[in-house]
Image (cartoon, rainbow, N blue to C red; front, side):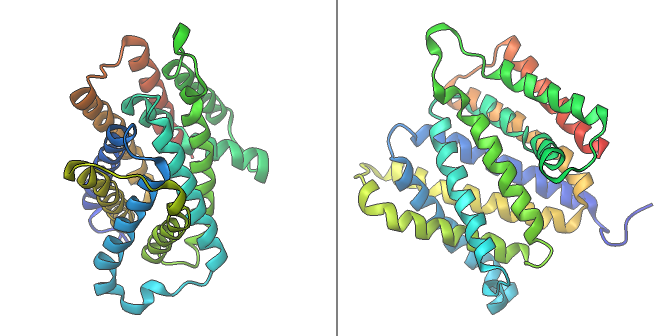
Length: 286
């Protein structure tokens, strides 16, 4: 029986999959320009484009309501977490192939479950604990250092998982009173303000139109990805949409293979599969 609140769930799922493709392209582009553009400068340019695109896409339908918020301090915190997330992701992608990086980020729902149990004393079933352990094991398989390749950068994606889990928890609190489009706008605006303040110490000349276009695409892919995700959750319930988020692993692995020649080995594929299976089952178990 179809849900009257979501008459077209298939469209929501399609939009969510499209969003994951945008996020995969965002991470692939970040990895491509990572060795050329300083992190804070890239973050500033990303949020400059993202804020402008968000306003252009949402203002025609929402008008001045786009700028109305009932939780300015929570908006600031959410934006700061997004800046931290974008910065750590940008640095992480200089050490970890984009496919493996994306797979590790898929641990976020499982880590949120873990944090809910430890911090909020929410009941978590034995099966869910097993899935959390399986997902973390998959992440360790993916990032396993190989001899001289050992460096702290290999483990930055795990730090990013914690940041993103906090971001999602703040988001889940804010959606009770805040419009998703308004949240998206203020997140980009906060990132733009932080980036502008740091710009005098992070600016570096970028030579060639190609680099400018690629950095601009960070904002395009980020803004479109979040916009499609917002629309996807409006057209289908979260329980239907979330399992399809794991298609981002396939998009990112394929993009990394095509652009950088990063073909995952058997162990990496095993770790990615373990994360994906535990993640999907974790969604179903809740």
